[in-house]
Image (cartoon, rainbow, N blue to C red):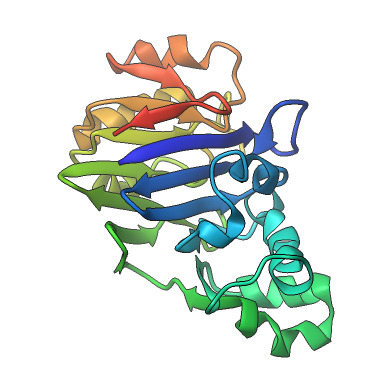
Length: 243
């Protein structure tokens, strides 16, 4: 299984770094995981939009979803054509949010572009050669983490979430745990992101083998996480990792 980093920036894209987006592949199967601002352009460095088997979205914040709108334009109005609607797996209300941006007439047309599955609770779905499973996490809004299994390997992805037992369960025994570290410290009104220390604690509790930090806020995040977990890397745009 191969993971390619399309972007890690939060909460807006920076030069040479799009917002959250990842490409997960096994054999001939490709899934775009989170469609943050700027990630569609980066995706096309590796695969055409029409070559995807599915899109999976962790939660509805714009830095994880904004390029769904441009993907819609590409598939609806441009030179790309699909033989069938592209499966889109996302949180409750995602399609309604898209309609809010695209206009009410799009409600009848979006199903021609995206075959939408709304995530609620714990569930699993096989997409080609990838077995996806997901569960709800703690981000102050409907948000989900992802577990991907293929050819005996396991990739876990936190989306955006504070430390929670659901995330420990999703990452259990993962060969690679892709975890956001979007908080430098916990705010006084309650955590909705992980700190580097949280990511290390999660990886330890889950028995993960490797920790890959993304969506990072603290400049010394890797060093902070290494204090609590022995194998830590920083996600870099364009990086490809064999899981």
